[in-house]
Image 1 (tube, rainbow, N blue to C red):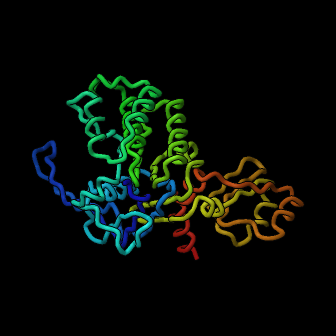
Image 2 (cartoon, one colour; image 1 turned 135 degrees about the vertical axis):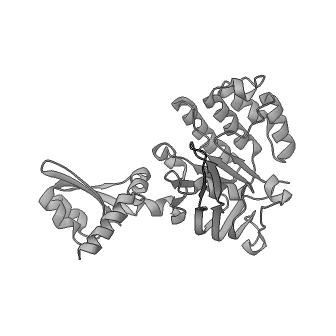
Image 3 (cartoon, one colour; image 1 turned 90 degrees about the horizontal axis):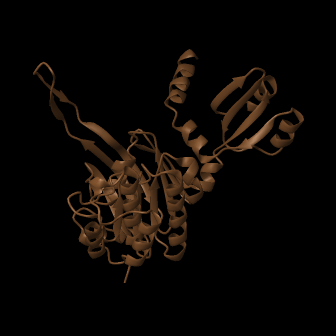
Length: 327
């Protein structure tokens, strides 16, 4: 019997990668300091929902997701996974834990295929490893994505390799399924077919799905929860609806917009001639919509992608530091 959808809890997790030595062109040896991929991450991933994991390059997304699949062990802190119908206190460390790892399917950018074997052999491997594997679904998806399973991965395009990885993630029907940038190389029609298949199979076979992607605008419709990582730390972890309420825009004459901004935190500002658009943190308060309308200013909602870009913009922190220094 397949366990209920998995949840996960990370408490004060730090992941550091050790010092490395490399040989320079002049023959000398250079030692680099340890790098910190995750710095005190703490969050709970709800079971049975689709969670978007967002972050700029180097934010720590892949490192965090690899912890869930026991590909990486934390330097310090704890990682616990378990079925959502079990108390979190009874969830288990995934490291060298066959029961947990058998119920967690992580699909990384590479697709995690056996390069020296035909694709069909990789599928047999996963079928043997995943208790809830659906061979019929796998076959249908491979037909949909037009993948020749008689070929070795090296003979496939990048997009076809990604399609095989996507197929493995869906057909495994694991209580926790992680897609880490699995769409890379797929063309737009294939990506959209993949998104539709996620929603359709999730509706029929509920489980926990984590989806990491830079194409936020394409996938935000799938998200119920959102985790945003920024430079190795959790910037936010909340429902997609709550994140949506974190900002709005004002567009109109510069003087009118500036009056409406007041003391609000400005996440972004751009101006074209006499017209300015600002992105503000928070939501409009009572009466603000009417005041904006009277002043000829348009209030707009923001897509998750815009909010993500503005909230993780490193220039925003530098600007804030400069403003504090000027005071």
